[in-house]
Amino acid sequence: MGKRLAVVVGCNYPMGPSPLRGCINDAVAIRKLLLERFHFDASNVRILIDGLVPVSAGFTTVRPTGANIKAAIDWMVEQAKPGDVLFFHFSGHGTIDGGHQVIVPSDGNLIKDVDLRQFIRRLPERVSFTIISDSCHSGGLIDKKKEQIGPATIRRSVNHVGRRMSDEDIYELLKIEERIRYGTVQGGVRSSRSDIKSHIGSLLVQLFGDEASLEFQPGQRDVIKRSITEDEGILLSGCQENETSADVPASPRTGGLAHGAFTFAVLKTLRESHYQLNNYDLVMKVRKALLSEQPDQHPCLYSSDGNAKATFLVV
Image (cartoon, rainbow, N blue to C red; front, side, top):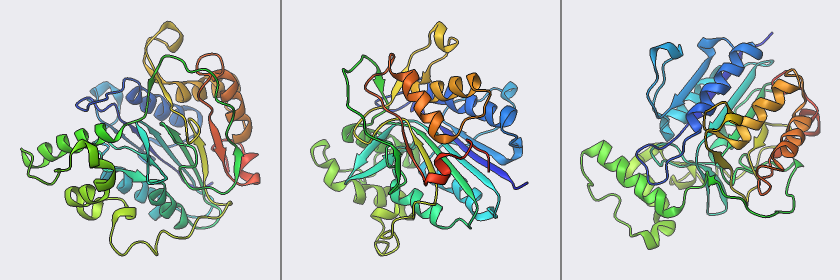
């Protein structure tokens, strides 16, 4: 039996302009699921959250910055061997930049679909790599050609806090990060709110250097051109590319804790199915479960035909 390695990330952005409430709870619940139901060893699960961890939690964490998240994924990929199972779960804000799907770490150092693609390209054959992204615009996050479950007709909108971060909020997050790093705004984050979209790449490179996304790095264009094949990687996205993923408040239904609507539905569906569902059936059942609560949120599945029918997190 191969190794089972995981990276679990929850970003609530407590100091940011658009904080969330359920992402750390998502991460803690997913870690518990991996340990108790899917036979992951605690030493092989890295959790990154932007909140305090009580001693009773039984784990330590590091801040989920862009560099730390990519370093944690690299830790998995670097040691992967045929037969291993890799898992990455992200709960937090997402956005679209230049036509690319993006997840937003706690420091605003964007991780784009092209960055995740490069990790997947490095994997040996017969390594399973499953990604769950409970973030806005997460459909297609690994640039898959094979869309098993995709766009649906968007129905009426409902009142919820979305996990989408606007360009203006990213700008504010970068200013906060500059103050954290230098004690004051040094002048790197200069652009006005009105031109943040056209300058985001240069801002990120100024602030984070070679820790910024490959998309913004000089000389990296040839590296990121090739798409991955349909046999590589499995993505369960919280919504379609043009949709938002809901951050739902604490209620009796959610056990008194705020959660991401998608993550909560995944946990509930797996529990009700005794943790034995293939990826396709899992996403279809979660879609159905979300229909009444979040009718404008449609989870998607991107994978090969074989991986669509493979049991979730089982080789």
